[in-house]
Structures are given as C-alpha cells and as structure tokens.
Image (cartoon, rainbow, N blue to C red):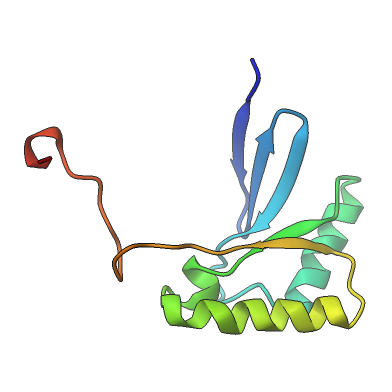
Length: 113
C-alpha cells in the first residue's frame, strides 16, 4: 500500500511511520514538558542507546503547551533557539491548528447538519 501508518507510544514519545519514513515525536510527558534542550538530550541519549534514529519532532501543542494554544509560539521559539544554537537532534515541530479554541469533538451522525 502507498501509505502505512504505525503509532507506538512510549512515556513521552510517539513513533509515526508513513511508508519507510519514521519520526519520533516528543508528544506528552507525565512530569511536565519535554521540548527543552535537556529533555531532548535525554530522549536522544535513550534513542541512541537503542540504535534507532535520533532525530525528533517536537509537538508544540498538548502537554508541551499545557493544552493552551497561546503557548505554542513560546514552545516553537525555544526550539528555534536550540536550532540556532546548533542542535541537530530536532528535525521539526508539530503545531496544532483549530478553527475554535479548545477541544473539538467530532459530532455524531445525528448531530451533523
């Protein structure tokens, strides 16, 4: 098939595979955020120890923004500073965009217009 999706969750990682390209996403963390340089270094060390791709994508939403969409630019700015400082571990960011503030559930068929 042209696209194969596989999601594997670890305490703070989400592995997303599309075809043969796999990306580790720093998604949620029980102890707070995981986008800062120290958190990324710890994750990369663990990935390196397991001989897997050590490039990660940082999720600017969810736990890293404390579920406040207005904090996403702060997370992205921190990651940009890390990139400007020479880090090669971060390959990108994931930014969530919604038409309305907050969680938007998918309406049931009966609720659809």
